[in-house]
Image: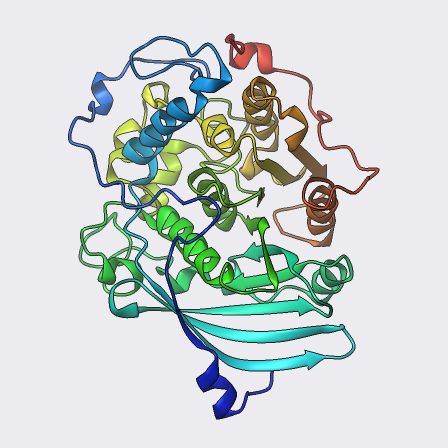
Length: 406
């Protein structure tokens, strides 16, 4: 259990952090662009959209053109899917508790982050740091709204030398619809109260929360700024993949059981959640424009392989339950295969992975062990026995897309 710090320790650990000071700057504050083609004027694309097709219609020819293409793809997902990030602003961090866990050989700390204008958004950040000099590779998880990480997960991660950082993404914005403006996220508290003009849905607000947590962590000497990983489950996994697509400071992105508008696939569906249902049940997760694609998914100018491609050439792992049909594990394999073409094009094929396990919709120890093995390999350059590129389902990619890398 965490024990309170002395008032002197609290006073000496209150910091004001400049948001976005990092090895690589995140995308932020893009603002909606005025010249956005309306959904009903977009071409129908039956297969997964070609990630190499530029805005002017030509196909890029070399990896040197990827940075510009990446910006184009980011515009597509923001304009038509998720909305736009608000400004980063500043972050304050005040430590309120510290406790050395002798059995775990780690120190537990609680911080309160102040985010947005006048630090109006308060987010609790829980750190578990292994004993030793550091800096440590760090795994950030935003699902504390569903409970603390299990003892088994914490014990294994700490034993392997990872610092764990957990926060509650619903402190950034609640996971509920606005009672005044149906279809939008609750604008009375959190991010939308601080940024009332934001056009983004809850998913991009939660992705913004991951970014601000990173801003705070990068000011701490025990955190290795070059070895940051993020993870989350279900809707938290959707936010994880989106955050990883937006922010190049993140070295490893690991959505779990994230399905529709996560690591799944919108055009390749196998008795699972789809665009039509998700925009009816959870419209406040997205840009209001996305609902215009209901019944017309073929006009959506991206699919989930696009978000995965935006992570490239950084490390990306999707962890999935075989019995989690609603999250489309079969379609997730197809989007993995499509994104792997981009990874191969950028000379990073080995940095994208997928891992299946028997079982239902949960983020369990087996999923975490897969993530830790992948992180050991990609962040710590250790040899691991586990394979991350094997297909579990029959290869159906030839029916999903016909394009290839230039």
